[in-house]
Image (cartoon, rainbow, N blue to C red; front, side):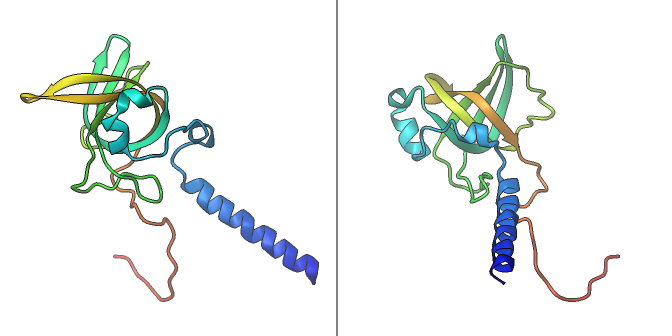
Length: 167
């Protein structure tokens, strides 16, 4: 009987590992490189102090630009939910740039798309937003996830009892 209970615990553990392991949008390899887990506002406020740190970021694409070295995304920062998906709401702690050493197709990386990234802070760059000078933290991409528009941000499983029909 003890052996049966042990197998049941192993099976339950494996199931939990599969459920939560598959829910992670970023690879374990990328997540293992994270060295900064504080707030984006603290990082942006004193970005020079955090150069070289790697963090997980979320947001909405504002612009994609092809540059000589590859591509650059301008991102509106958004908080992440428990699945590391950006929560598209009226709460942002600023903007940032992510640079890539490859070309990003603008039809895939569309304005308004939600992203989650592991990226390394490399610089701070001053750019104008209208007539206001804004200090953008500049990141180098480690890994990027573009979220499909139709994917829900809640759990990807549902329990229920009953009869249903579709027409």
